[in-house]
Amino acid sequence: MFFHIEFKTCSKCSEEKPLNPDFFSRNSKAKDGFRNECKDCSKKYRQENEQRDKLRWQKYWAINKETLKKKTYARRKASPIDYRQRKQEAMEYLGGKCKCCSLKGSHRIMHFHHIDPSTKKGEWSEMRKWSWERRKAELDKCHLLCANCHGAIHDGAVIYDEWAGYYWKKSLDSNHASMAESVDAPDLKSVDHYGRGSSSLPARIAS
Image 1 (cartoon, rainbow, N blue to C red):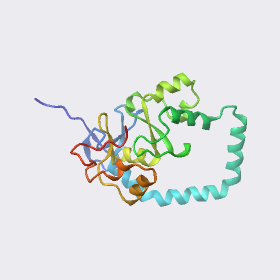
Image 2: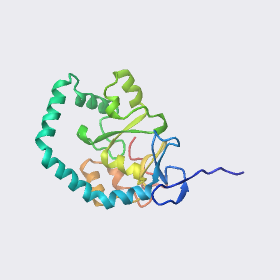
Image 3: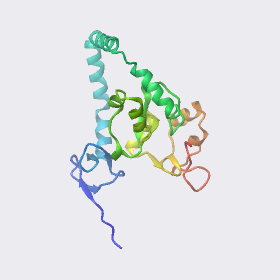
Image 4: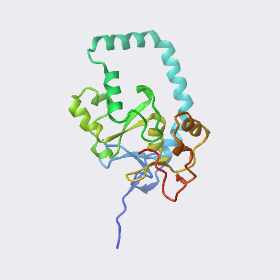
């Protein structure tokens, strides 16, 4: 029995790699459903340019601070819709805490992660403008995740299994461990090098 495996050439390193989530991040707007650059190149680029991007934003903010504040205030005042309240309602609809690490945080650090990117019909910036029924239908395709876990999923460090839930491929570093302690998430602290708990099956981080 033969299995057909599709391959894709990375636009950065020009290496041909299997076309699957282990090597390419998903992109619902692309024809094949994946980004053009592989995960290794994306990670390398972020690491090389993290400090540059941070300094660039700090410089821009320092120069345009007052203008940006005025624009933000004017936009909020002109809009009769409280988008922060809408996001808070959406967060509560999905349980109010990160599905992966159980963190309960500000609306600013909580994300809506589409379990199957191919069914995605819009980002939150678009969803927040929809009617509640339409927004709820889209939220039913999502899990609520904190920014840290959401980024780890797209980097491939966290895996989602329909039966086992979310689990880390590698052991948690000290920062993640301290976060687990702060949110009282013992399952996170018990994950071993292979993302498993005390049993031979992946540790269920969130029910």
